[in-house]
Length: 330
DNA sequence: AAGTAGCGCAACCGCTTCCAC
DNA sequence: AGTGGAAGCGGTTGCGCTACT
Image (tube, rainbow, N blue to C red):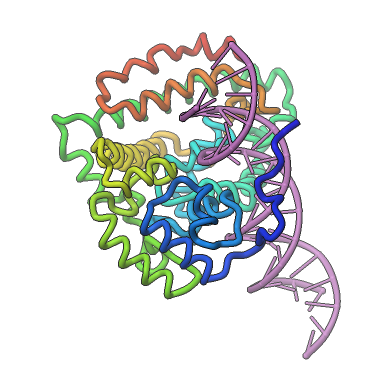
């Protein structure tokens, strides 16, 4: 038997949040920081379950959320990351600092899926399906497998190279160049993607003041990983005794930019990026939640490698990922 | 102008994972 | 090592808005 749902209690309010509730929640978090969600309803008097509070905060109220149209770069990143990571929206969101997993998930389900389906039907090969159950002929698989493997290997290599360069202390200009050129964070037009948008102006003003006053050490739009994790958010709020969050923010930010450069180079070297990929791309997807060895083991290595502080320390993780190993899972 | 269909997004549900005891 | 509770995550739902007839 599973646990009873936390929202079974009578008197728990459901449905859309009112501005008043938002203000209550925001002012509480402003004071205590995110985390310990269990205590939030009790302490705020909100008639919401803790889960609902957390969701409202992470998906809507927290600073640094970008809303509205996805840029082409974000779109490409999502498509590529989805192919690599499957429907692990939280993991994908960690590479898109200003987007929530919910947002990305919604965008995928409403826009990208259709887009890719169109591409799929438009192309003869019917490749790059988001639904792996749509089978292709084995001969097709045999043909495209090698191509896909090479492509993946190239992708990984390029990402690795880009990150190494980005994190290399010898090349401090790398990141600043990216920043000044076209990091996707800078794509945000004023008004189109404010660092924080709320349904009410009051909350917006309140939070802006809060962000100025309370979040100076960790700028709102800074971190992917930290922003996505309430624990880490709490860390940022609670003066971050370890000093790690700032570092993590920086690394994460740089990583994002690195991905930006990666996708740009990817674009230039793979003009057919927008074309459907091979079906093998979706073998990363955790079809039927089966623990795919590559997605669970090797991609966690990838993530470890990507997030590893000293790029030199972790840069050999991917050396272990060979095509032969990949082939074992095909 | 009214009715209807489609779309987008916020929020919910339930399962899994993590962690403290 | 086992257990229970809290948090995290992904899938799904439902409502409001918009476009179309």
